[in-house]
Length: 280
Image (tube, rainbow, N blue to C red; front, side, top):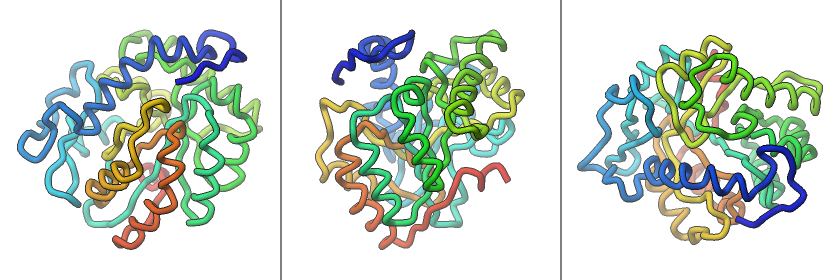
């Protein structure tokens, strides 16, 4: 991750972002990607056992093309207006990107989404709204959803005070409205996938729907990018009906393979939905 010396304020120094956030992302991403925690066909996550305590979002994968098991059940999460996977009866994909900062890959990603007429959701932090306003405006103009990834990207599960929890979300929403003149969608993605029941309850009370994911891979470190072959293999073998896919906009691999990936998913019979389908 390269430094951007022009960043300012608490979040806006990429060095701080890397120091405080990357370790948690590395652990969480290994967990949700099924990379090294035994979360494969023979050792899936038991549902419902982690909702009452602070946890990293995790998944267990079975046979290719089948829905994974989350560490809380789909119906259990719905009670908190929280979602991570759609219906097993529909070959539909919900494509999402987490945007911590901009390093030049997002324009190509947006070009590819436009080529395939796919609407995605981009979860942005305060830094992204500060440093890439034109890209945020482009996302909106091209029919994408911009969701709330908090302002400073903290571990939200460590925040038990409602006022502090709300401030992290409201600062982002206020900045978005200042930038675009429109209200931000009340879709929230917890940084690092860290959550607990109290967080989910607070987000629901504030009118937010919380979105996790049912498919992701190790794509977040711009200085250690997976090969195109690795990305395409994992994202096609593990795609499944109702998949909420998490990718990172910082990934040069994602930008390079997205056209091929979307074509492969389409050839497999998948279509693309939007997050508002979960909340209607």
